Length: 328
Image (cartoon, rainbow, N blue to C red; front, top):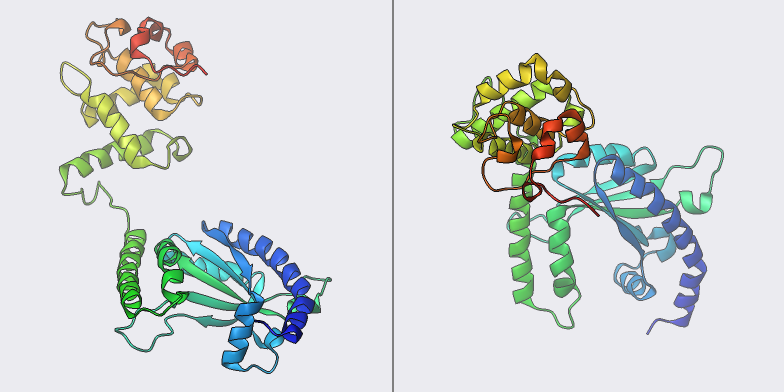
Protein backbone atom coordinates (compact mmCIF):
# COMPACT_ATOMS: atom_id res chain seq x y z
CA UNK A 1 0.00 0.00 0.00
CA UNK A 2 1.44 3.35 -1.07
CA UNK A 3 0.58 6.30 1.20
CA UNK A 4 -1.79 8.74 -0.49
CA UNK A 5 0.48 11.72 0.17
CA UNK A 6 3.40 9.97 -1.50
CA UNK A 7 1.24 9.00 -4.49
CA UNK A 8 0.05 12.59 -4.91
CA UNK A 9 3.62 13.89 -4.90
CA UNK A 10 4.60 11.22 -7.45
CA UNK A 11 1.68 12.10 -9.72
CA UNK A 12 2.67 15.80 -9.66
CA UNK A 13 6.18 14.91 -10.82
CA UNK A 14 5.14 12.24 -13.37
CA UNK A 15 4.48 14.64 -16.32
CA UNK A 16 8.05 15.96 -16.00
CA UNK A 17 9.41 12.41 -16.13
CA UNK A 18 7.28 11.68 -19.19
CA UNK A 19 8.70 14.73 -20.97
CA UNK A 20 12.21 13.65 -20.01
CA UNK A 21 11.56 10.16 -21.35
CA UNK A 22 10.24 11.45 -24.68
CA UNK A 23 13.28 13.68 -25.21
CA UNK A 24 15.93 11.24 -23.99
CA UNK A 25 14.54 8.25 -25.88
CA UNK A 26 14.94 10.18 -29.14
CA UNK A 27 18.46 11.42 -28.34
CA UNK A 28 19.77 8.13 -26.95
CA UNK A 29 18.34 6.22 -29.89
CA UNK A 30 20.42 8.41 -32.20
CA UNK A 31 23.53 7.96 -30.07
CA UNK A 32 23.15 4.17 -30.21
CA UNK A 33 22.76 4.13 -33.99
CA UNK A 34 25.89 6.27 -34.45
CA UNK A 35 28.07 3.51 -32.98
CA UNK A 36 26.25 0.49 -34.38
CA UNK A 37 24.40 -0.37 -31.17
CA UNK A 38 20.78 -0.79 -30.04
CA UNK A 39 18.66 1.47 -27.88
CA UNK A 40 16.41 -1.09 -26.22
CA UNK A 41 14.05 1.28 -24.44
CA UNK A 42 13.54 2.99 -21.12
CA UNK A 43 11.31 3.01 -18.10
CA UNK A 44 10.00 5.45 -15.53
CA UNK A 45 10.32 4.15 -11.99
CA UNK A 46 6.97 3.01 -10.61
CA UNK A 47 5.60 4.61 -7.48
CA UNK A 48 5.82 1.34 -5.50
CA UNK A 49 9.49 0.91 -6.40
CA UNK A 50 10.29 4.53 -5.55
CA UNK A 51 8.58 4.15 -2.19
CA UNK A 52 10.66 1.08 -1.32
CA UNK A 53 13.85 2.86 -2.34
CA UNK A 54 12.85 5.92 -0.29
CA UNK A 55 12.20 3.79 2.77
CA UNK A 56 15.53 2.01 2.25
CA UNK A 57 17.80 5.03 1.61
CA UNK A 58 15.94 7.86 3.35
CA UNK A 59 16.75 10.66 0.86
CA UNK A 60 16.00 14.27 1.65
CA UNK A 61 13.77 14.56 -1.44
CA UNK A 62 13.21 11.33 -3.44
CA UNK A 63 12.10 13.26 -6.52
CA UNK A 64 15.22 15.45 -6.65
CA UNK A 65 17.82 13.11 -5.15
CA UNK A 66 16.98 9.85 -6.98
CA UNK A 67 19.15 9.18 -10.04
CA UNK A 68 17.08 6.46 -11.67
CA UNK A 69 13.55 7.82 -11.88
CA UNK A 70 14.16 7.59 -15.61
CA UNK A 71 16.48 4.80 -16.77
CA UNK A 72 17.38 3.69 -20.28
CA UNK A 73 19.46 0.90 -21.79
CA UNK A 74 21.80 0.70 -24.78
CA UNK A 75 23.13 -2.68 -25.92
CA UNK A 76 26.51 -2.80 -27.67
CA UNK A 77 27.70 -5.80 -29.73
CA UNK A 78 30.85 -6.06 -27.60
CA UNK A 79 32.90 -4.11 -25.08
CA UNK A 80 35.22 -2.54 -27.68
CA UNK A 81 32.44 -0.14 -28.75
CA UNK A 82 31.94 1.35 -25.28
CA UNK A 83 34.57 4.14 -25.64
CA UNK A 84 32.98 5.32 -28.90
CA UNK A 85 29.55 5.20 -27.28
CA UNK A 86 30.81 7.23 -24.33
CA UNK A 87 32.09 9.94 -26.66
CA UNK A 88 28.71 10.10 -28.40
CA UNK A 89 26.93 10.37 -25.05
CA UNK A 90 29.05 13.42 -24.22
CA UNK A 91 27.61 15.27 -27.22
CA UNK A 92 24.15 15.37 -25.61
CA UNK A 93 24.74 14.87 -21.87
CA UNK A 94 27.07 15.63 -19.02
CA UNK A 95 28.41 12.43 -17.48
CA UNK A 96 28.02 12.95 -13.74
CA UNK A 97 29.21 9.48 -12.77
CA UNK A 98 30.41 6.25 -14.35
CA UNK A 99 29.84 3.07 -12.39
CA UNK A 100 31.03 -0.41 -13.20
CA UNK A 101 32.01 -3.55 -11.29
CA UNK A 102 30.64 -2.31 -8.01
CA UNK A 103 31.36 -5.61 -6.27
CA UNK A 104 34.51 -5.52 -4.12
CA UNK A 105 34.98 -9.27 -3.93
CA UNK A 106 36.69 -10.90 -6.94
CA UNK A 107 34.85 -14.18 -6.41
CA UNK A 108 31.43 -12.49 -6.54
CA UNK A 109 29.46 -12.07 -9.76
CA UNK A 110 26.45 -9.76 -9.37
CA UNK A 111 24.44 -7.61 -11.78
CA UNK A 112 26.85 -4.69 -12.05
CA UNK A 113 26.75 -3.76 -15.72
CA UNK A 114 28.14 -0.38 -16.69
CA UNK A 115 25.93 2.53 -15.55
CA UNK A 116 26.21 6.21 -16.47
CA UNK A 117 24.55 8.90 -14.37
CA UNK A 118 23.71 11.61 -16.88
CA UNK A 119 22.25 15.08 -17.10
CA UNK A 120 21.01 16.61 -20.34
CA UNK A 121 22.98 19.48 -21.81
CA UNK A 122 20.72 22.52 -22.32
CA UNK A 123 19.69 23.07 -25.91
CA UNK A 124 21.30 26.27 -27.26
CA UNK A 125 18.84 29.11 -26.83
CA UNK A 126 16.18 26.78 -25.42
CA UNK A 127 16.96 26.10 -21.76
CA UNK A 128 14.53 23.84 -19.91
CA UNK A 129 15.46 23.91 -16.21
CA UNK A 130 12.76 21.40 -15.36
CA UNK A 131 14.49 18.73 -17.47
CA UNK A 132 18.07 19.98 -17.59
CA UNK A 133 18.52 19.59 -13.83
CA UNK A 134 17.31 15.98 -13.57
CA UNK A 135 19.90 13.23 -13.25
CA UNK A 136 19.04 9.91 -14.84
CA UNK A 137 20.57 6.51 -15.45
CA UNK A 138 21.81 4.87 -18.62
CA UNK A 139 22.74 1.20 -18.48
CA UNK A 140 25.15 -0.09 -21.10
CA UNK A 141 25.13 -3.83 -21.68
CA UNK A 142 26.82 -6.12 -24.14
CA UNK A 143 24.61 -8.45 -26.14
CA UNK A 144 25.64 -11.30 -23.83
CA UNK A 145 24.82 -9.31 -20.70
CA UNK A 146 21.46 -8.27 -22.13
CA UNK A 147 20.51 -11.86 -22.94
CA UNK A 148 21.57 -13.07 -19.50
CA UNK A 149 19.69 -10.27 -17.77
CA UNK A 150 16.52 -10.81 -19.79
CA UNK A 151 16.39 -14.48 -18.80
CA UNK A 152 17.51 -14.49 -15.19
CA UNK A 153 17.36 -11.03 -13.59
CA UNK A 154 13.74 -11.00 -12.43
CA UNK A 155 13.88 -14.66 -11.39
CA UNK A 156 16.70 -13.88 -8.98
CA UNK A 157 16.07 -10.27 -7.90
CA UNK A 158 12.27 -10.13 -7.90
CA UNK A 159 11.18 -13.51 -6.53
CA UNK A 160 8.24 -14.16 -4.22
CA UNK A 161 10.74 -15.74 -1.81
CA UNK A 162 14.53 -15.47 -1.70
CA UNK A 163 16.52 -18.40 -3.07
CA UNK A 164 20.22 -18.94 -2.38
CA UNK A 165 20.30 -21.63 -5.06
CA UNK A 166 18.92 -19.31 -7.75
CA UNK A 167 21.30 -16.56 -6.73
CA UNK A 168 24.19 -19.02 -6.94
CA UNK A 169 23.14 -20.21 -10.41
CA UNK A 170 22.83 -16.59 -11.58
CA UNK A 171 26.35 -15.85 -10.34
CA UNK A 172 27.68 -18.78 -12.31
CA UNK A 173 25.92 -17.51 -15.43
CA UNK A 174 27.40 -14.05 -14.90
CA UNK A 175 30.88 -15.56 -14.61
CA UNK A 176 30.37 -17.31 -17.95
CA UNK A 177 29.02 -14.11 -19.53
CA UNK A 178 32.09 -12.17 -18.41
CA UNK A 179 34.35 -14.83 -19.94
CA UNK A 180 32.45 -14.85 -23.25
CA UNK A 181 32.41 -11.02 -23.41
CA UNK A 182 36.17 -10.99 -22.97
CA UNK A 183 36.60 -13.50 -25.81
CA UNK A 184 34.26 -11.54 -28.09
CA UNK A 185 36.21 -8.34 -27.41
CA UNK A 186 39.45 -10.13 -28.29
CA UNK A 187 37.93 -11.39 -31.54
CA UNK A 188 36.80 -7.84 -32.39
CA UNK A 189 40.26 -6.33 -31.94
CA UNK A 190 42.23 -9.22 -33.46
CA UNK A 191 43.68 -7.83 -36.73
CA UNK A 192 42.71 -9.47 -40.00
CA UNK A 193 45.47 -11.67 -41.42
CA UNK A 194 47.54 -10.60 -44.40
CA UNK A 195 47.57 -13.67 -46.67
CA UNK A 196 50.49 -12.29 -48.67
CA UNK A 197 52.67 -11.78 -45.58
CA UNK A 198 51.55 -14.66 -43.34
CA UNK A 199 49.19 -17.15 -45.00
CA UNK A 200 46.78 -18.95 -42.69
CA UNK A 201 48.17 -22.34 -41.72
CA UNK A 202 44.75 -23.91 -42.28
CA UNK A 203 44.54 -24.83 -45.96
CA UNK A 204 40.81 -24.15 -46.31
CA UNK A 205 41.10 -20.67 -44.76
CA UNK A 206 44.22 -19.89 -46.81
CA UNK A 207 42.51 -20.81 -50.09
CA UNK A 208 39.42 -18.75 -49.32
CA UNK A 209 41.54 -15.81 -48.21
CA UNK A 210 43.37 -15.96 -51.55
CA UNK A 211 40.02 -15.69 -53.32
CA UNK A 212 39.01 -12.66 -51.24
CA UNK A 213 42.37 -10.97 -51.84
CA UNK A 214 42.09 -11.46 -55.60
CA UNK A 215 38.54 -10.16 -55.70
CA UNK A 216 39.58 -7.07 -53.75
CA UNK A 217 42.28 -6.41 -56.32
CA UNK A 218 39.84 -6.66 -59.22
CA UNK A 219 36.65 -5.09 -57.87
CA UNK A 220 35.86 -1.93 -55.87
CA UNK A 221 35.08 -2.61 -52.22
CA UNK A 222 31.61 -1.13 -52.79
CA UNK A 223 30.81 -4.05 -55.12
CA UNK A 224 31.84 -6.68 -52.59
CA UNK A 225 29.35 -7.86 -49.94
CA UNK A 226 30.14 -7.47 -46.25
CA UNK A 227 30.02 -11.24 -45.81
CA UNK A 228 33.39 -12.07 -47.36
CA UNK A 229 33.31 -15.63 -46.03
CA UNK A 230 30.16 -16.49 -47.94
CA UNK A 231 31.43 -14.68 -51.03
CA UNK A 232 34.58 -16.81 -50.95
CA UNK A 233 32.52 -19.99 -50.51
CA UNK A 234 30.34 -19.16 -53.54
CA UNK A 235 33.32 -18.46 -55.80
CA UNK A 236 35.11 -21.55 -54.45
CA UNK A 237 32.08 -23.68 -55.42
CA UNK A 238 32.13 -22.23 -58.95
CA UNK A 239 35.84 -23.02 -59.28
CA UNK A 240 35.42 -26.60 -58.04
CA UNK A 241 32.54 -27.27 -60.45
CA UNK A 242 34.73 -26.44 -63.43
CA UNK A 243 36.35 -29.06 -65.62
CA UNK A 244 38.10 -31.06 -66.83
CA UNK A 245 39.85 -30.02 -63.59
CA UNK A 246 38.94 -27.35 -61.01
CA UNK A 247 39.93 -23.76 -61.74
CA UNK A 248 42.81 -22.60 -59.53
CA UNK A 249 43.29 -19.14 -58.07
CA UNK A 250 45.99 -18.49 -60.68
CA UNK A 251 43.57 -19.54 -63.44
CA UNK A 252 40.98 -17.13 -62.05
CA UNK A 253 43.54 -14.31 -61.93
CA UNK A 254 44.36 -14.87 -65.60
CA UNK A 255 40.70 -14.94 -66.64
CA UNK A 256 39.85 -11.74 -64.78
CA UNK A 257 42.81 -9.98 -66.40
CA UNK A 258 41.78 -10.79 -70.00
CA UNK A 259 40.74 -7.83 -72.13
CA UNK A 260 37.84 -9.82 -73.62
CA UNK A 261 36.22 -9.99 -70.18
CA UNK A 262 36.76 -6.35 -69.31
CA UNK A 263 33.15 -5.31 -69.97
CA UNK A 264 31.94 -8.03 -67.61
CA UNK A 265 34.42 -7.13 -64.86
CA UNK A 266 33.43 -3.45 -65.08
CA UNK A 267 29.67 -4.01 -65.28
CA UNK A 268 27.95 -2.18 -62.41
CA UNK A 269 24.58 -3.97 -62.63
CA UNK A 270 25.93 -7.42 -61.73
CA UNK A 271 27.10 -8.95 -58.47
CA UNK A 272 30.65 -10.28 -58.31
CA UNK A 273 29.52 -13.94 -58.34
CA UNK A 274 27.40 -13.21 -61.43
CA UNK A 275 30.45 -11.76 -63.16
CA UNK A 276 32.60 -14.77 -62.25
CA UNK A 277 29.87 -17.14 -63.47
CA UNK A 278 29.69 -15.41 -66.88
CA UNK A 279 33.47 -15.47 -67.28
CA UNK A 280 33.65 -19.17 -66.39
CA UNK A 281 30.94 -19.89 -68.98
CA UNK A 282 32.77 -17.82 -71.58
CA UNK A 283 35.93 -19.74 -70.82
CA UNK A 284 33.93 -23.00 -71.21
CA UNK A 285 35.25 -24.09 -67.81
CA UNK A 286 31.70 -24.73 -66.53
CA UNK A 287 30.63 -26.47 -69.75
CA UNK A 288 30.81 -30.10 -70.77
CA UNK A 289 30.70 -29.12 -74.44
CA UNK A 290 32.86 -26.17 -75.39
CA UNK A 291 30.80 -23.13 -76.38
CA UNK A 292 27.47 -24.74 -75.46
CA UNK A 293 25.96 -23.34 -72.20
CA UNK A 294 23.16 -25.92 -72.42
CA UNK A 295 25.73 -28.45 -71.21
CA UNK A 296 26.52 -26.98 -67.79
CA UNK A 297 28.38 -29.35 -65.52
CA UNK A 298 26.80 -30.74 -62.39
CA UNK A 299 23.16 -30.53 -61.37
CA UNK A 300 22.69 -27.36 -59.35
CA UNK A 301 20.83 -24.24 -60.42
CA UNK A 302 22.43 -20.86 -61.10
CA UNK A 303 21.03 -17.35 -60.84
CA UNK A 304 20.75 -16.04 -64.42
CA UNK A 305 19.17 -12.57 -64.80
CA UNK A 306 18.16 -10.58 -67.86
CA UNK A 307 21.10 -8.22 -67.24
CA UNK A 308 23.46 -11.19 -67.46
CA UNK A 309 21.91 -12.32 -70.74
CA UNK A 310 22.19 -8.78 -72.17
CA UNK A 311 25.95 -8.90 -71.54
CA UNK A 312 26.35 -12.57 -72.48
CA UNK A 313 23.60 -13.65 -74.94
CA UNK A 314 24.84 -17.26 -75.01
CA UNK A 315 23.38 -17.65 -71.50
CA UNK A 316 19.94 -17.88 -73.19
CA UNK A 317 20.68 -21.51 -74.03
CA UNK A 318 20.97 -22.52 -70.35
CA UNK A 319 17.97 -24.80 -69.74
CA UNK A 320 15.30 -23.66 -67.31
CA UNK A 321 16.01 -26.66 -65.08
CA UNK A 322 19.44 -25.17 -64.36
CA UNK A 323 18.20 -21.67 -63.50
CA UNK A 324 16.99 -20.24 -60.18
CA UNK A 325 13.39 -19.10 -60.57
CA UNK A 326 13.03 -15.46 -59.53
CA UNK A 327 9.59 -14.63 -60.93
CA UNK A 328 7.24 -13.14 -58.34
